[in-house]
Image 1 (cartoon, rainbow, N blue to C red):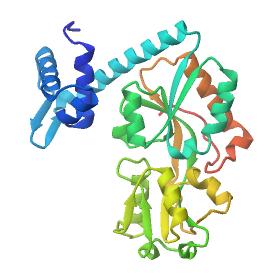
Image 2 (image 1 turned 60 degrees about the horizontal axis):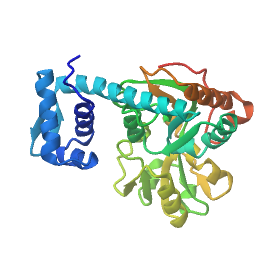
Image 3 (image 1 turned 45 degrees about the vertical axis):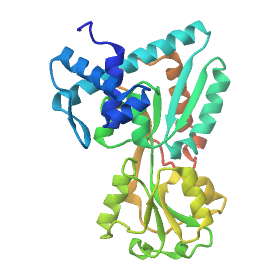
Amino acid sequence: MDRRIKFRHLDAFSAISRARSLKVAAEQLHLTQPAISRTLKELEEIVGVTLMERSRSGVKLTGEGEVFLQFAEQSTAALRTGLISVRGISEGGGHLRIGALPSVASGLLPPVVLEFTDRNPGTQLEVHEGPHYDLTSRLRRGELDLVIGRLGRPQTMQGLSFRQLYTEEVVVVTAQGSPAATVRSFSDLEGFRILYPPQDSAIRPLVARLLISKGVPLFGNRIESASSAFGRAIVLADPRTVWFISRGVVAGDIAAGRMVQLDVDTGATVGAVGIMSRSDEVPSAAMRAFTGVLSGAVSDPEARSHPGSDQPDVPRND
């Protein structure tokens, strides 16, 4: 490896690749735009190829840049993990950063976290909720150690491994007493406000394929959001709002009678939920302990009946 390549080169390159903008990446790294542009130019001179094409609309990775990005992110992720592990040893405990999609964060995860922290009081645990694309990007960069959620599109899973825990369906819900509660066909939803998964969400392609199979065009009166808090608030505030969402997010609301599930067929949206990690990662003791508690909770009969999950499949690597 060329010793001229420094961490700042890889960090800047990864930030520009994510932001697709020198200006935005510079702001994220607290640098000036000329400074980050100079860093990118230095890296390209060292590797001997053009990694990015610049234009007025932003920057775009070349073929060589796409290949280099994967290994650059793996390198910086490994270094960050190593530093955290060393600090954990010196401080007498571990440090584990978990990312969870909303359906997991509001369903399976809370009892797992309580059990894990009881068993491992010396481990500092962080839990971050967010959309699929954001969490998997942070996982690749080494900012998270594990992500629990739906299996995403192939391009979002590059460099990651996936171990399935269970499957989950997308449902369509509305507030108790809403006129939408009697709807039996997707085509009858046109007169309602639709909360719809955004482009970078894991369930977006599943819902899109479902509507295509039913001959229903993309709703024009939709609001796109991956926020479970926003979705819950607007559905409960407006009886004419209908929400396409993973069952685990709203299972508690349905059970409590705050929301009702529409009687429409969404069986085609069933997808795998599991544990994502970097494919080249050597699991730390804290990671192994957490995945052990998580797997045990899913295989437990009571956990299997937690809102939003079907019978769990045998864990596997995909």
